[in-house]
Length: 430
Image (cartoon, rainbow, N blue to C red):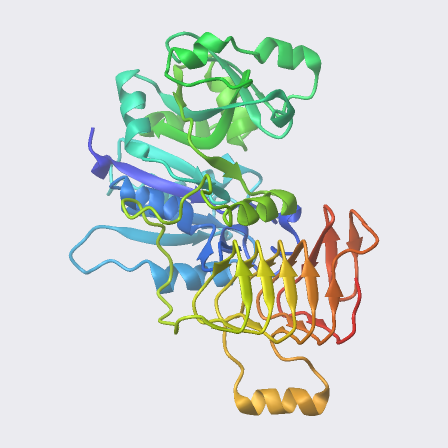
């Protein structure tokens, strides 16, 4: 087995409706996280640390910002075979429709992914919206040593976490014998429940976890992937290919017990970001042995003037004046004006600095500058890039609403969200 015989494919996802409005103007893998990174940086960095340098990223919706990020960030020198290449949905002789599912996306791009010029032995399929750190070489080792046709990376979960995941059953040697995508009935859950020995025999402590969930990470033998893609009814890996394949070929489970979060909803995205402000967060962006790569923006250091900052992350290029910040992510180029208080929020920052001339024009037009104005109160909120928050605004969801669509803001799962490029007038109270 050689890592040179593996090609990686990162699935960019569909509309990303559950992450709206963060996906209103961008593809899901392009959503910023932790102040300075984007979601797609996670699987790409994992690939690099696993010795994999040939990577396709499949996109369909709002792919412009993702294309730009990939082009600016991941460049290889002339004498290396590596690449990180976007494959955007397009009309071809193979089909004129949008991708119908994860497997259908790969089928549309089969001439590139399964190009005979590369003659890869294996295809590694990854999701573009998960937060985790994994050495895929360990998964490849399990795949080859078990003589599997397909290997699925799995993680132990509790019963309350099963409804949104693919849940499976495996025998003692790791072969998957049953698989249900997003089980809903007690009968299905009873059938899929596993004994603690399944975990302890692999050195994993159950801690109340009785189920095995798919992480949406797959390794396919090249020939097997080619074969399953011939069936037009196979449009999705979780719903179609894995359940069908376990009846025909050996499908193995690779057990993983590290931090893993599916950032597919506003609540999970918000919670994962805020958790990063913990003193010792479960996911460590400070690991020098396996750093997460992203665009080098060459920004100045963050400046903090007479402010109180507790348990927060401040990305570079920001200016914070006489403010109070607690358990908050402050993204690149964030401007936070004096007297503002920000608690348990995600401030994504800005794509550019406004010039003095632009700020003068804003003042004449009565438009807030990009950033957080004076004397604002923001709590349990997500402020997307280039947002303008006027002076004396209060964004706290004072009425405790679960979901609401406002003129310049949204509320999802009780979290106030100001979308990209939006303007919140001064004195606004939400």
